[in-house]
Image (tube, rainbow, N blue to C red; front, side, top):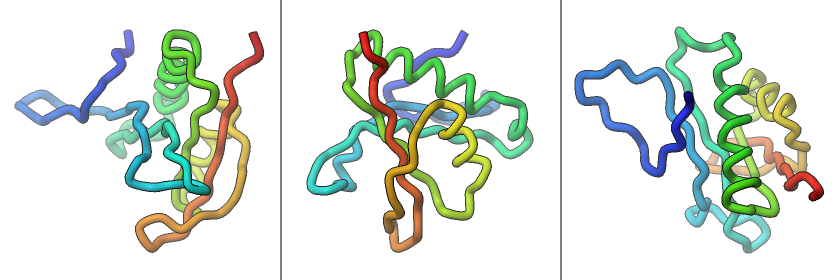
Length: 115
């Protein structure tokens, strides 16, 4: 079962496979607004196994069904095609190119399903 984390895990002798979370991107404003971002990462040896998509599905369910968020954003570097594919498989729609940390990124948005 996937657990929703509220803070980044610490390495304390256990092997860390992944990290994922919903977070307010108050350190980065999109059109003057704080956004709630789906963020995830995997240790390289676990890439290509569908884990990022599975984690994304679980955290989106929490964000939309339990928290009641109206939308969630996700962004990655323009060269990270694997992450872009995960976002697309999760239903995120490309919105625009942005610059974050002085690097080019693509910005995607997913609106909550209609009730």
